[in-house]
Image (cartoon, rainbow, N blue to C red; front, side, top):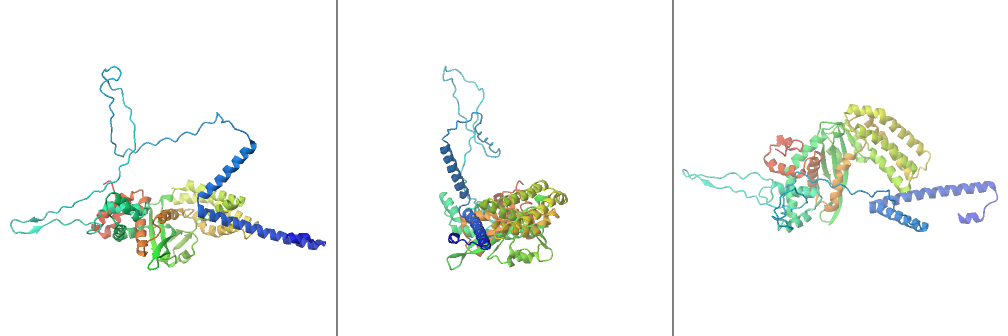
Amino acid sequence: MVDALKTLPDDVTQLQALVRGFQADILCKDTLIVKLKHQLAGLRQHRFGQSSEALDQLELTLEDEEVALAQEIVCEPDPTVQSKQKPKRKPLPDHLPQIEQVLSAGDACDDCGGRLKTLGEDITSELEYVPARFIVNKIIRPRMACVSCDHIQQADLPSRPIEKGLAGPGFLAHVIVSKYADHLPLYRQSGIYAREGLDLDRSTLAGWMGKCSALLEPLAEAVGRHVMTGPAIFGDDTPVKVLAPGSGKTKTARLWAYVRDERGWSGTGAPAAYYRFSADRKGIHPEDHLKTFTGFMHADGYAGFNALFARDGMSEMACMAHIRRKFVDVQKASGSAIAAQAITRIAALYAVEQDARGLSPDQRITIRQDKSAPLFEALHTWLHAQLRQISGKSPLAAAIRYGLTRMKKVRPYLDHGQLELDNNAAERAIRGIAVGRKNWLFAGSNNGGKTAAILYTLIETAKLNGVDPQAWLTDVLARIPDHKINRLDELLPWNVDLQG
C-alpha cells in the first residue's frame, strides 16, 4: 500500500479505483482483526479462566497508579465516608451436639476473701471438629442344640449389600458420596483411611463401587422411567475420558443427562436426573435412551438429536442461554455495542420468567403472551436489521445468524407453560461431572463409566429432592437386598421417610 502511494496516477477515475481498493483492503483487515481478537479472547478464557479477569484488573490498577503519579495529588480520606461493616456472624445450627465447659471463678473473692454469689454468666460458643470414626459391627449368631432331639439351629445372617463383604451400608454410602458428590477419587480416600489405621486398597474400594452399582442399577432404572414419563425434559451431554485397554491411553466417551424438573410450573412430578454412559457421541445413543419418551426436550443444537426430533411425538425446545452466550463472547472480545444491546433485550425476556416461575402452565402462557411475545418478536426483528448493517464475516454476524436460527426453536415456550426459556437444568446436572473429572481424571473402563452413570443418577436425584444422599443411600443399601423388585418405587428419594 505504501509503494502504491509513491506513484499516484493523475487520472481521477484511476484514483477513485485505487481508493476503493484501499477501502476494501482495510475492511478485510479490520474484519480479520476483529476475528483474531474474538479468537484470542476465547482462548484466553479457556486457558486462564477467571485468572484472565485478574490480569485485566492488574492492568487497570497499574493505569490508576500511573494517573495518580502524573497528577501528584495526595487525596485525604473523606471523613464522611463510613468504612465497610464487617459481615455479621451467622448463629450456629441448633442440631449440633453441645458440650458445656464451666470455668469456675473460685469460691472466695480474690480481693477480700468474701463469699461469692452468682450474678449471671457469659457464654462463648466455639465451633469444633471431631474427626469421623469407624466402628465394627459384630453380628453374633449363637448355635443352639435341642436337648431332646439334638437338632442344631441358628439365626440366618441378615442380607448385606455385599455378601461376605467387609463394609456396611453406611460405609459404602460414604465412599460413593465422597467420590461422586464430593469429587474425592478412590486413591485419595484410601490414603485418608490409612491415616485411621485402615488398610483399604484403592482396588478394594473400586470393587465395592462396582458391586454397589450392580445392586442399585434397578433403582436407577426406576428413576429413568420416572424421567421419561414427564411431559418435558432437559437433555445434555459431557465428555469423559475412558482408559483404552492395552494402549495406555484414553479415549473420549460421553455421559448423557436427562432431567425432569417441573418446579418451574408447579408440576406434581418429583424432580429427577437420569444419566447414561456411551463410548462415543453417536446419535444412536440418545435415540436408544429416549425411545419411550414423548413430549418436548430442551436441548442445544447437537445434530445427533435431529433424528429424535423428526420422530412423531418428539419436539425440540432450543436454549436461549446458548444464544445469549454467543453475544456475551463477542461483547467481551470486542466491546460491541450491538452485542451488549442483544444481551439487554434477552435479559428482558428472563425478567418476565422470574414473574412466571412457580405459576400454573395456563398462567405462564398468559403472562408470556402478554409480556414476552412482543419482546421476542422485537428481538427477532432487531437482529435481522442489525445483520444487514454489519460485515457478514464478523463474529458478531455469526452470533446473530446463530441466534436467528435457534430462535425459531425457542418460540414454542410462548405457547406451552410446561417449557422453560433455556436448558440450564441439564447444564446444572452435568456441572458436578465437569468438576469431578478434574479430580478422578478418567474412568478405568466402559463398565466404570456405566457405574458412574448409575451412582450419579441416584446422588443427583436425591439432591434435587432436598434429601441427604448419604443418609438415603445408607437406608437404601440396607434395605434393597431383601426388597421386592415390584415395589422398588418405595425406595425412591421422594418416597422414603428417613425420619421414620
